[in-house]
Structure formats: C-alpha cells, structure tokens
Image (tube, rainbow, N blue to C red):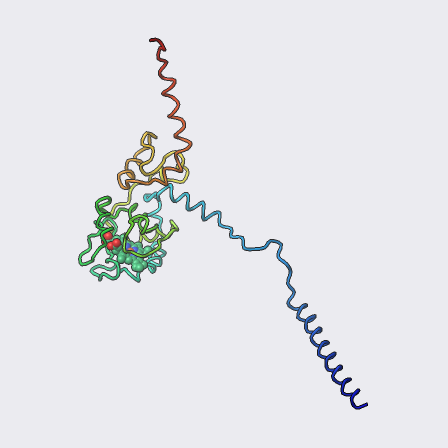
Length: 248
Ligand code: HEC
C-alpha cells in the first residue's frame, strides 16, 4: 500500500510538470505569436541609388550651377571624413595626407614637405592641376582615379556631398579659383545628346566636349553607355554616298 502511494505521488508530480510545461507553451505561444513571412529573405530596394550612380558616371557636375548653390556647412561637415588624414588650415601641418589649404586649383602633388606616392607624382603628368573635375573624380574613387595612390579612402559616391565638400575646400584658401559659367551640356536633360569625356569626337559636342576632353584622357566606361545608339547612324551613309559605276 505504501508502495502504491509513492507511485501515485511520482505520477502526480509528472503530470503536474507536464501540465505546467504545456500551459507555458500555450501562454508563450499566445504572447510571442509569429507568422510566417509572405516572402522569405531580404529585399533590398535601391533603384534610385543605381540610377544616381549611372547618371553620375555620365555627367560631371555643372559647376557653374551647383557651386554657387552649395551648402558650405554641409561641406565642412563632410570634411570630417578627411580630417583623420588632412588639415585644411593656412600653414597647417601635413598629416597622413598633405595639407589641403588652397587645394582647389593647386598643382597636383605640390605641397611642401609631403612625400607623395609615385602614382600621384605620375598623375601630375596627366592632370597637372586640381581642377574642380579632377578633385571630383579623385574624391569619388581615389584608387580608381589615381591607381596606386596611397590615399586609402574608399571615396564619396554621393554627388551632392562631394559638391558641398569641394565648395567648402574652395572656401579654404581657393576663393580665387574661378567658378565656370553654367554649362547646359552638363545639365541632366543633356545626358544623351552630349557624350562626355573623350568619346565620339564627331558627335559635334559643344564647348563642353573640348573642355572636359582635355582634362581627362580616357574614360572607357562612360563612352560605352552613350555609344550604341549614336554609333549606328554614321556607319550607314558611306555606302550610299558612293554610287560608283560598277564598270571595269
Ligand atoms: C586615410 C587617410 C586619408 C583620408 C581619410 C583622406 N585622405 Fe586625401 N590623401 C591621403 C594621402 C596619404 C594622400 C597622398 C596621396 C598620394 O601621394 O598618393 C592624399 C592626397 C589627397 C589629395 C591630393 C593633394 C595634393 O597635394 O596633390 C587630395 C585633394 C585629397 N587627398 C583630398 C581628400 C579629401 C577631400 C578627403 C575626404 C573626403 C580625403 N582626402 C581623405 C590620405 C587620406
């Protein structure tokens, strides 16, 4: 009899435990109710980024329009990303990178007391001056614009940020560097009409083509985007213009 009682207790304890566990499951199930997602996985929706990137690759900023409207305070804030390596005050020291006071319009690789990389020294041959376009392209992707540069910085992809930053840099000792006149060929609507940078010399591009072509020697990827549509047309005429007599 005492043995039966002992088993009753054990059984009872087991049932009670099971009851508690089941109840807890129900309760937590009710509290932490999860539903299966309709679609699995992450969907990263960034078409605008891609579009902006493409536009940026084709058209350089229209400095005459964007510089006067630039946000200098935002540019100064953006310079925080450069400050680990650069000082931009008059007579300020070189850091990991050269002092940038007056860098807009300054000769490339020319700041006293700084040991530039061979790559930057060589870049001087192709682009002797830090023009607005040169700075813009360098800051966009330093390692792509000057392969081998020792400026280990990924670059700033956002055009607005670069424009503000360059406007601010200009205000630090480069105020005399002229702002060019607004250039319609660089305004958004002009994208398909005027292939920028070197490509398609016969396209009859206005002054902009000559101007930027001089600054940047080669831009193979920008040209590719503009070519397919325009290239087809000039190829046809020569055949029809020579109705040569098929005699002899
Ligand atoms: C990690 C350090 C580092 C950061 C961050 C950095 N730079 Fe540099 N920068 C350098 C170095 C190093 C050089 C020299 C490059 C060479 O000799 O190849 C340089 C060179 C330059 C030059 C060329 C100057 C000249 O005298 O020819 C410019 C312009 C420049 N940097 C602008 C910037 C700007 C603008 C930013 C911020 C958006 C920035 N850098 C961020 C290290 C840096």
